[in-house]
Image 1 (cartoon, rainbow, N blue to C red):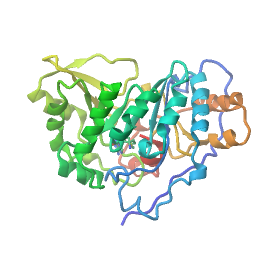
Image 2: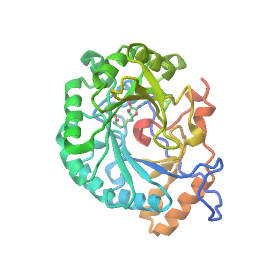
Image 3: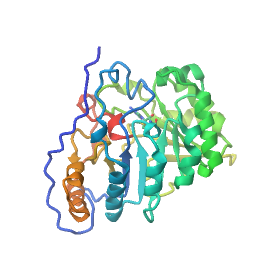
Image 4: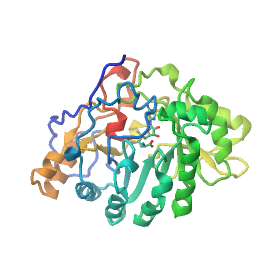
Length: 354
Ligand code: SAM
């Protein structure tokens, strides 16, 4: 039986001094992306993310009054945009289980120059795609770990059928959100047989499958290096049947490496978070469901921005605090990962947002 863990929110780390120069961290990285977790709850229990034996009936999710309201999230997003953030991704937990999420999308879509996107397991997408698109959502990423129904149900551990996720992808495309990115986490022994069927299915569809290395996020998934299927192996597997060539990045710091089908029928991406760490170009901050700021997916502690939000601080004061935190940022977890660090008590991905 695995030990029960609860989200750590020791937001006590002191913010370092910041003199107001260009906002870069100690390694010269700007603040460009913000991932916002709108809920730590999810209707799936993916075995590598929210194992059912840990995230059970007794698990203490964030209480409703602790969760940032849509208005608070929108205010935070405006403050971050003022500091140079260009892209906001809504995530969770499962963002579409948060009631009336389209209302939040509508608020965020009003922020000038912000590229807004969302990551979802797709289970509720068929119902919500039109409302989300109408509210201003232009892009979406759908997680899908297999097209084989039995494998997919085993991974999501909620007995959820593949067909409904495919319906969600189709509804999002029909609502104008194409091309859609389809994220597949590859775990050795769990779904590596699904790599080729997934590539075949979406080849020529205009959508882009991205194969993600299984990571040691959180402390509940019992991660082992042996479970990681390196991206190089994925590219080899797909390329042997459907020849590929490398494609240029769309922009500096893009996490996925792009590979194009030589016959011109589209592309795939690989995200090599374990075998080729991309800390050096990481410009991402994360805001948890209850308004704690984390500067790394593998963090063990964050900064309590909600206390400022609800304590009467002005936007300028909050902005100054974020700038100081970013200025002092040193994170580079994936570059220093070892079997030992993998056992550290890190924040769960369902809480911090994927
Ligand atoms: N519920 C939404 C979804 O399924 O996309 C958003 C949150 S989920 C935590 C975001 C992404 O993180 C999903 O694609 C999921 O597969 C991925 N993920 C979760 N645990 C992971 C791990 N240990 N390694 C790699 N990716 C992981």
